[in-house]
Image (cartoon, rainbow, N blue to C red; front, side, top):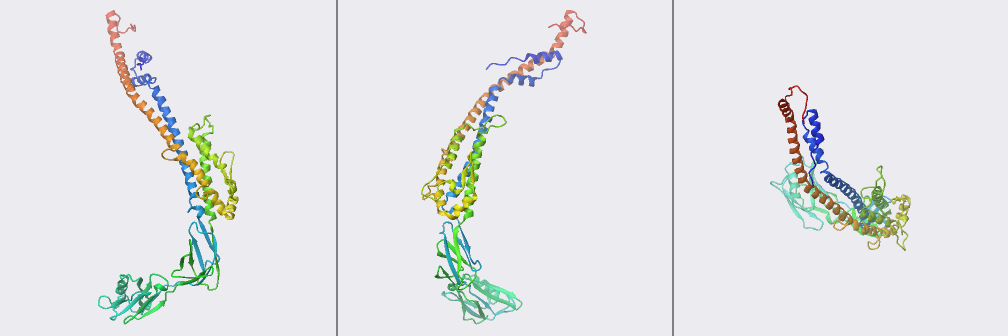
Amino acid sequence: MSTNPINLSSLLSAFGSSQPINVQEAVSQSLAADEAPEVQWQDQQQTLQTQTSALTSIENDVNSLESALTALGDPAGALASMTTSSSNPNVVTATAVNGADSANHVVVVNNLATTSSWYSASVASGTTTLADGSFSIQVGSGTPTEITVGSGNNTLDALANDINGMNLGVTANVVTDASGARLSIVSNNSGAASNITISHDTTIGFTQATAGEDASLTVDGIPINSASNTVTGAVNGVTFNLVGASPGTPVDVVISPDVNSASTAISNFVSAYNTVVGDVNTQYTVGANNMEGPVAGDPTLSLLQSDLLSAGSYSTSGNAVATLADLGITMNNDGTLTLNSATLNSAIQNNYSAVQSFLQGTSSNGFVNFLSNQLSSLTDPTNGAFTVDLQSINNEIQDLQNQINNFQPYIQQQQTYLTNEFNQADIALEELPTEQAQLNAELGYPPSSSTTIL
């Protein structure tokens, strides 16, 4: 590149006004043309960075859409969520794991499971000295354990600590009220198998408060005993929670699909889908500057638009729910989806298995899998279109930066050269008045003469 000529207008202006040259301004003006390529490269970088920002934002929204699809496609997720109801929650309630079978069970609770407990005669306090002696504790059919009351272990507080350290399956506590202190021994588990027997008592005088018994109930007419009031295993995936006994009173427990959970998951999909469509539409919309979005012509955006539109035409056969429209989901002219909640809830309530089949398929080959596969070609972190596209743009930005970096030494060299030239010119201009005076004197002009010879 050639060196720009010295800015003579700056020199003459400075000379005419008897003012020094503004070296910094003069150098800046002279460098402007040389810096034009760098400015152009920086503008190109800015454009590419804007494209990167737009593509990254769209990719994030597509990832959110994939997450919504994953929630719909999870065999143990929202579409498998079950809800329960009881005709008499004061007697029995229930919970069901995802994927449990829909059913109506009749439960009769004859009696609840109880927890065995004993208490001693009262003494003044937990630190009152007790008479020497012993007693035995037996849990269920286990081996009795003898507890000795004697030196170092002859108060209720000491006995409670001693018993709790033996891991017998019981918990001992000192309970104090207006009548004094008593030692309470309670089984750690309910049911007959954890019933406590205290025998051979020669010191404190124990009384049984509650015997440990199993719960007795029937499920669909089948008699069941349970050591706990939380009954699991009677029906696969269902837990019955016994609340109160009511012999002879049948309670209807209904296990059914969780309509709200399924409806929310489908609604989340529609919302995420519309967000991505909105991103695409924004790029193709002409703004106030009469320009489309920064990635309107990007092939990745075209692929995304095509994949999204394909969702509207997806259909299956031999199923009560064969299209999105059967779920109350219709596509608008701008590509967004509209959800009719009434139609959706009706489909879930009346054709739940058909809804699952349409969305998930018989072996993960339904609508969710179809659209997920379409999008994965865009979002794959290694070879996806977004990844490749963004990497290509980043490479362009880096190439431009390399050009800028390589160009900088030339600009710095020009700046140094021009600064020296203008500084020398400034010095020369500052010396001109003196030289003029000397020349006038040699030519015989008086010192006050305004005659100037150039």
